[in-house]
Length: 93
Image (cartoon, rainbow, N blue to C red; front, side):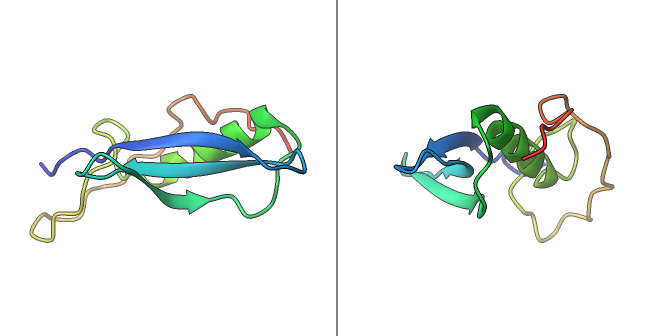
């Protein structure tokens, strides 16, 4: 099995008080790199966080084993659907 990716969701508030989620990945050198960011602002922190967690879930092929680095020699995994709880009931932006 390939290595687990170190992903995290955070919410950024701009000077205009807009909230946006950002998914970051911890690189081998110990620095964070943005993987994806929300384009349109959410109405509040909870809406941005919930939407970011749903986006993170979309990056995971199998929720039972978590986000894995790609292994070009491995057969494609069977995608297991379902919510892992964090993004359930996303507030409407």
